[in-house]
Amino acid sequence: MNAFDELKVKETILKGIQELGFVTPFPIQAQSIPLLLEGNDVIGQAHTGTGKTASFGIPLLEHISNNGGIQGLIIAPTRELAIQITAEIKKVGKFTGIKVATVYGGQGMGIQLDALRNKPEIVVATPGRLIDHLNRGTIKIDNVRYVVLDEADVMLDMGFIDDIEFVLERVPENRITSLWSATMPSEILRLSEKYLNEPKRVLIDTDDLSGEGINQSFLVIKDREKQKYLANFIKENKKGQTIVFCSTKIRTRNVSRDLQKARFSVVAIEGDMSQSRREHSMSKFRKSHADVLVATDVAARGIDVPKVGLVVNYDVPNQDMVYFHRIGRTARAGAKGNAITLVSYSSVGDWNIIKKQIKTEMTDLNQKLGVEINIPDPLKRQVGRRIAPQIRSGYGRRDRRVRNFSSGGRRSGGHKRDAPARDQYKKKKFARSSYSKSSSRKRW
Image (cartoon, rainbow, N blue to C red; front, side, top):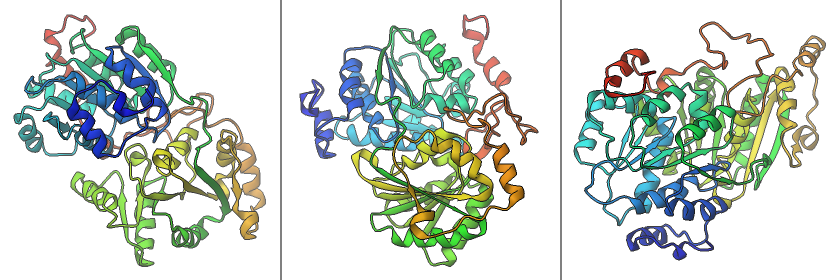
């Protein structure tokens, strides 16, 4: 497929594609859309910003008929991503008459029940809230013919793998299933072997972690100096909006407050915010009513704003794939962008590990700006010890050989569940038991 107008799909879909200005498909789209239109199951692997939503959205709209009940089910790990997917599907399907509903934790159940009473043909859901609706009987999946698992590696990391299996056991076997992931850990491959029917694999630049189109740079400074340099970098960004990623909720609030004091137009997203406030912040940023978004990593996979010209890692992430997902918020859809990482002295060891994964030349801002590095001797020894492989090439899981110093209530993955950032659903055993009586599968 060399152009979207070559697709043998409904005229109403082509009209939506044309209105969006899509002409030439990206590689992931050119390879996966024909396969899905033919009725194949697909495993798609490509990095962020490569057009995966249209890859599964166009075939989904083609296979679904109007007024036939819920026929398409899209499962995503976070509410931001679910909202984003819904918006994209609605744009492509603008002239089809197909209705889309979104269900996710943090939003009032009444709002979602109203949307479901409108008899949508497609439901986009986060796993926990979807199970809530299944238990209530407010979502029926008997007629589902098309299932999409988006960002499967993130769902695995967030502990959703059992929930995904719970749902897949209950959708009809005669369905088209596509699984999309930036990385392919063994657990994801086992899931695909179990629930996908001879899937076709579409692997685009699976080893390319260079961040194509992104000018990457770093600056090693004292932590207390970060705010000054951050403000300067934002002022110098003439290409569009800026996203600043922080490691914690408190850090996000402090950075956002300091930028507001410096008279920047700022919004923030972090785990303890209510859903309405999060949506309000994202809406302002998407509409360019705010120039800067300060966010924790929970939003790294759910932000798709074409005008982002600069991403600043205020804190070094503790997983290499998180770094690539962060910087992928700029240079969307073939555009150009900049990414700057502010490296505190205590994070030099972690940063050196991430740099080994980057396959393109980076700008050393210490040399360019003449900023000296004066790491105290005790900290130098500490950094040296931290050169051990704490970070692995995967999303959200540390090497098991490394002691987890931040344990205490944490799972083996080393990540604490950020309750407001993902679905706060009831205890799984209770939730499943009330629904699984009709299932023939012994484990349930």
